[in-house]
Amino acid sequence: MDFQLTDDQWALKRGVRELLTARFGPDELRAAAGAGSPDLDRALWRELGEAGFFALRLPEADGGVGLGLPEAVLAFEEAGRVLLPGPLIATHLAAGAVDGAATGEAVVTAVDGVLVEWLDQADAVRGDATGAEPLRSVDPLTPVHRVPAAVSPGADPEAVLLTSLLTAAEQLGTAARTCELAVQHARTREQFGQPIGAFQAVKHLCAQLLVRVEVARAAVYAAAVTADPVDVAAARLLADEAAVRGARDCLQVHGGMGFTWESEVHLFLKRAWLRTQRTGGDTESDELLADDLLAGMG
Image (cartoon, rainbow, N blue to C red; front, side, top):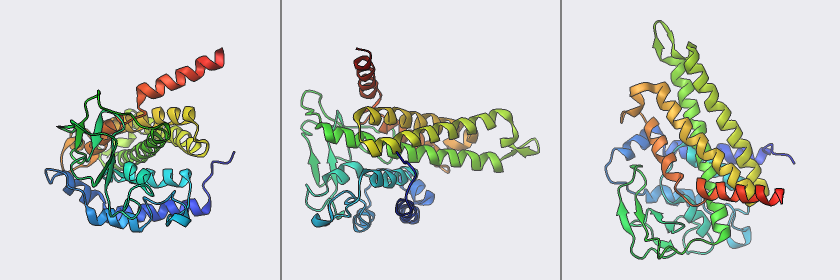
């Protein structure tokens, strides 16, 4: 099985990165985080729709781009790199089922557990959000509501699988970006007359960041090809770990500066934390992998 990206996949990845960094770069990210209450950028949402972000997997006969799950994973990895806000996965999964989702004219959120993201600004909600109560979100760019467990309907298996895999892709993008930020800072920040990257402890942190990113990348790309639930569970666990521990280590490299509002580093950790609460998180993935191991032993 060949997991190397094709020329077309590299071109897609570059195109999405250029679009997102031009429209939602670090300056826009910090400005949005400091604006107080998060507000979804409808113009950017429509631009994503026009670029085919939400309709990537929709058949061409239905007005979509006609690509597959591996290409969607690459696009969501880029969204994770820039911490693009909004219910991206729910809207992507609603393309073809909810009017306007594919083109970015409609914002769709979903109840896939007890938390619902962007409920107040969504045009359509998939699932029963009855009784949802607003919560104070750890991520300043992702408002959340809690749905009473008694009315949470759960999601269908395919939606759970795709949500977990695309979340893993976003976590992978976040982990890769925090690795880059840590290495850049280690190369330029000087203490005692030399870059801090010359110190062994900082070198080790950066090396561990890279190892976690590449292990997670291999797992996420493989799961995108196989779409096997066990592969997706393993990929999700590795990507969640790479994103959360990577952001923590990036903060360690930046020191106190990483916690300030002038730096976006702390925002990566907060988003990574929040994503771990989505469906298919550590408990569900651990149980699925354990069941698979026990079945193999039987």
